[in-house]
Picture 1 (cartoon, rainbow, N blue to C red):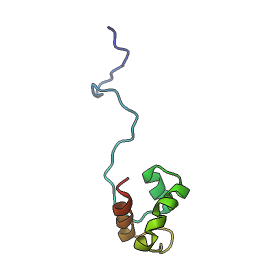
Picture 2 (cartoon, rainbow, N blue to C red):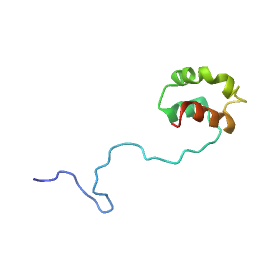
Picture 3 (cartoon, one colour):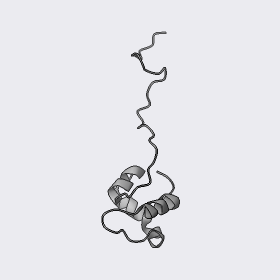
Picture 4 (spheres, one colour):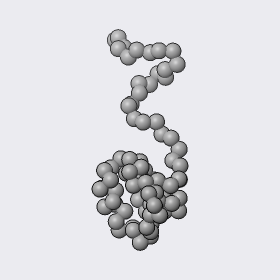
Length: 80
């Protein structure tokens, strides 16, 4: 049986699964756009998700959520 998968030097024996590489998640100030991209959803969907948790999260101070607010979002919604 012939293998059609081409190997180049340095490739692993497993074919890639086209998923983005897992990078460590940094808890830094994020905007809504950045958070929705992390979770893989549209901004309006992300707004609906955080709606019930707005009191615990608090208001943004400017464009980004603070590190404390991002930690609260991650604990309430789970890690992206």
